[in-house]
Length: 114
Length: 110
Figure 1 (tube, rainbow over the protein chains, first blue to last red):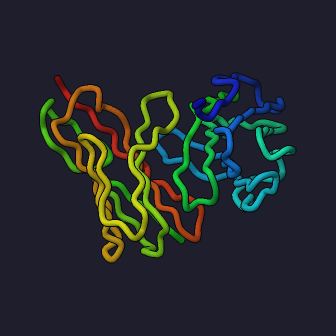
Figure 2 (cartoon, rainbow over the protein chains, first blue to last red):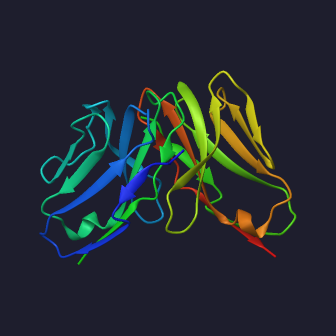
């Protein structure tokens, strides 16, 4: 069974440029999460989807971040424009249902903003 | 607001030692507690999930315990190996989204 797939694995951009990350969850998992992980810290939730509905986006900086999961399967996280402080690892995870269930993580996208 | 703390932040042990990693959480109203492993530059690998009704879970050389009343969980690693070197994170799931600790960075020296 394939795990959570993320692309790209690495991205280097200049500040003020846009960037997008893609995630494909484990087949059959209807809950999808995007996390931000800064160096030396644990992941922090940005947004959680139940199917195509964003049920928790309270931690998503909506002035520059956006996300979508149009068909309830794969998802895209976008930053526009990127700032120096956005340099971090962006992790995607999925689970069969709600946060009551075990979450499975992808390898992450390491973003560097110059 | 749930807060998760992991002690120690870093640990170095010789190969073959048994060791314990500690995790504490402030809100005991959790649904489950999950332990993860993270290798440098990699994503998180789920090791063990303890439901709130359980006291412990075991997988191979790993044993995780949960004491909701005291807000503590421990991860016990038996007969440590150099391949166990990684960062170990615990995370609590409840009414708030999954909340992670900062992790314990483990080095097992051959």
